[in-house]
Image (tube, rainbow, N blue to C red; front, top):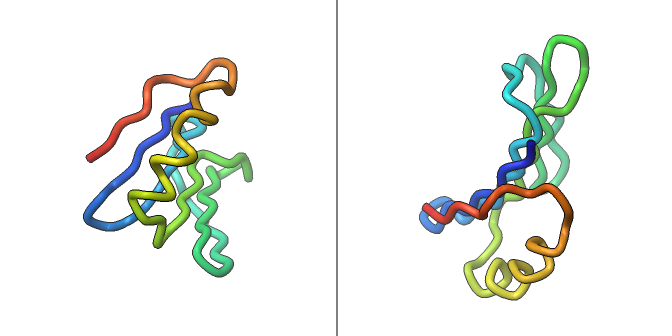
Length: 73
C-alpha cells in the first residue's frame, strides 16, 4: 500500500508506505523519512514542492504499479 498526497498549503509531497507508527525520523535537506520501531520506512515527505512541480510529476506517479489514488489537500 502506497498513498501519495500533496498538501498545497504546506507545499509537501508525501508517500505513505505503510500503516505503521512512526517512532524515528531522518531529515536531510527537504526530505523527511519516518521509520517504525523495526526501522522500516512508513512515510516519506518532500517539503517545499510547488504545485507546478507536483502537476508535472503527477502523470509519472500514476505509472508506478500498485499506487493508490493521489490525494491533494
